[in-house]
Image (tube, rainbow, N blue to C red; front, side, top):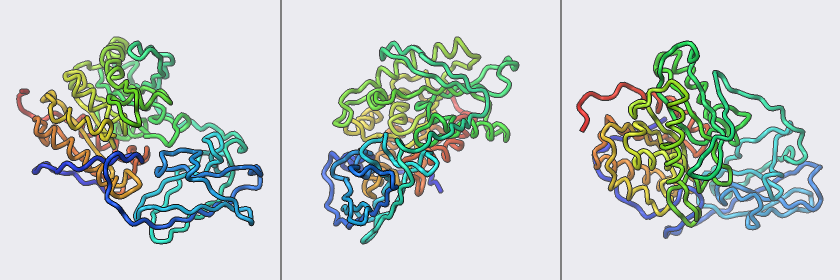
Length: 406
């Protein structure tokens, strides 16, 4: 269930707590409870193996020495750690690296394990296989529709190249029509389970269903692959303790000055801002809002899912409070109320999004232009974003509200 929040009051700004497991601000002391991990490993586990827990409580560090398990006399592995009550834990077991993470018995990727922390929680795990020992899984592609993959597309603003994944609407080759365009970050996770790391958004399936029901006009989707280890820097417009190099401004320039002009020359688009949208999640959501505000009149629509508004000491809030957004901008912001592990951090993630929305409302974006959703029970995952994606698209590409532009 999602909650649509009207903006009829201002929201109190709270001290910074980060959506991800990095805490820079003061935090109230919470009495913690003990959580025990009991792990059974396959017989193929090397005798000198070192088992670790990697999850949202330690930044997904696969070899974190503080989260190392101890081998017991019976061959199982044990660890006991302290958590806040109600912590929404997500984790996997590794042998110290992602190359040796646990897999299922067939060698396929496992979804994140989850647990809700309560008093004296005991988590029992049976590891079926390890990545470096499992059989190579069969690659199953899940793309439907006309997906064009363009490798080595130049990004002069960043001095590198990137793969584009462009989904064309049905009948594009013969229609002669021009189409709106949606630009999206993290293209590896948009269309194909075979290229995704943590699940896909099922953008192609969503568009097929929306088109079949005539609830969305046909659109072109341009997905831009992220840069792997460069993702944090390229998607962040602000420096941060966790992100010492910020290249988000250059990425925004690439979108505006290089990619969009090329797409408009190459495909039959409707190039006007009112037909051009930008969307992303987490840091991709932050970058989408940053780009829309910094380059008014280019992207007339933006969807920001579970955005990392904590980056740079909530610098995005300062920008929103001083922004002069295009009065025709349509902006969708959402956040899950279980985005982070610790309940207090999840509440702060929600508050950060509400604060951004309130700042933009004060800068002239009314309810007909600004939609905010708090998704109940939703976590920081591709599956959660995929569930909210169709409604976000329907709202973004709905007929614009009547009234003159300011």
